[in-house]
Length: 128
Image 1 (tube, rainbow, N blue to C red):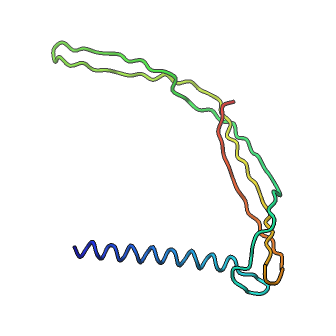
Image 2 (cartoon, one colour):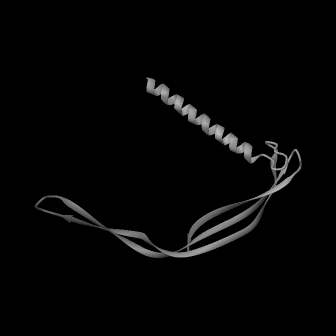
Image 3 (tube, helix red, strand yellow):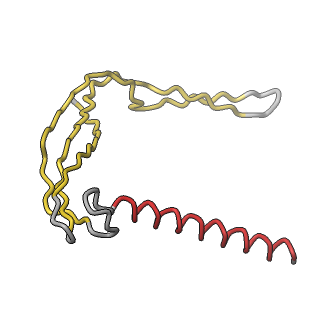
């Protein structure tokens, strides 16, 4: 019984520490660099700056069917199955898209406008 009670306290402690850490990060990320007011920054604009698409061609062996062969041994009375899988080589394209964004932020206390940048990457694979 003591272990369960202790385990709940430690779990509650770590949840509290995680929540406190996230709140601290949010506070510092929303602090204005000009006037140092917390929770003063909000996003006013976000736009796509750059888009880069790369295509990589590759081949892959794909299973397309199988053949089962049954062997029956009279002496032991056991039956064994051997499966052979047939493969086919197919051409694929891996498409990697990188996007770069510019975000404009404004302070609601002093009106200072700052810019930040972020990137995103998406991947998809399709047959040629």
